[in-house]
Length: 140
Image 1 (tube, one colour):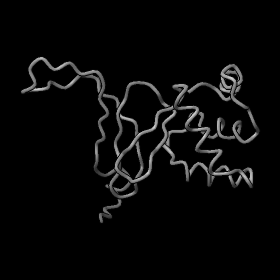
Image 2 (cartoon, one colour):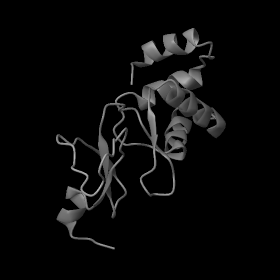
Image 3 (cartoon, one colour):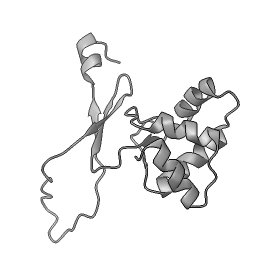
């Protein structure tokens, strides 16, 4: 995801309105590795700018996704998550705390039993326990 300043320019170039609320969201998403939901992002934004609407958060996330600045991901948690890291990667989700982490796979898997199958895209979600939850030994 580009810097908040670059996103401001990109939004204006695309004919989209740039408001203080959107600029706040740009800042909150920049270098954000938590893969927030819209509700979680709204909660943080509301603490910094009371009165920001959930609709503004959703619209800004939608606009950013359409511009290719972030990706919306479904990791089986029930809520769509948003990832400003648009590089080629997958995700690991902790079954205990729900944390989502980026995972980089260096070798493409072999697809046995699928003759003449050409892969155009893949989104893999690994599930298990993160290091912190494993270390505490607390399992559901």
